[in-house]
Length: 222
Image 1 (cartoon, rainbow, N blue to C red):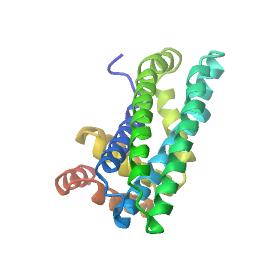
Image 2: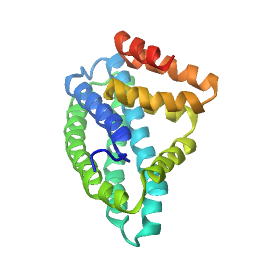
Image 3: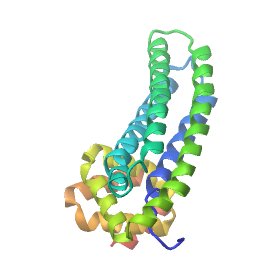
Image 4: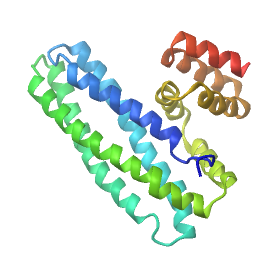
């Protein structure tokens, strides 16, 4: 099964990257510094967007198609998505309160500590959730779909994303991939996306990757 297409490798690498960045930043932040809090707020918003989008994409594409094949096969993951969403909403509310307090010149250190602790618990649960999808759910998808069909699911997901969200995904996915994985992903994207969209993706990649990794990717794509 190792040579088969994975439904989760690409998005889950991006999510792990985003959660790790958010966790590290929330741990070391000076919550009396509005500039640092603004950075936390910005990254937090981005991470929460990709988490919400990912759950919606799984529910509306991968799990929907699986449910059509095997009644009830999607229920476990969908229930976990609902539970995780509630905890995510709580984190979003906490971050909003921290940001509001900092903008008003208040010391948000105590609230920041609570956010970091809650985020750590959330991250642990989310990592376990992804691990389960990568083993149990992936096994079901391999059993009931060909690689061509799984590739079709991925294409379906990418087409339903608005351009801004797709570029946001690239920001977190690309640095977490190997060079070979990047080339495979962005060759396909370049072949199918409008030139203007590919140029926007290039700008995102140039910021997200090291100069060396960016140069290697562009050389491979050209």
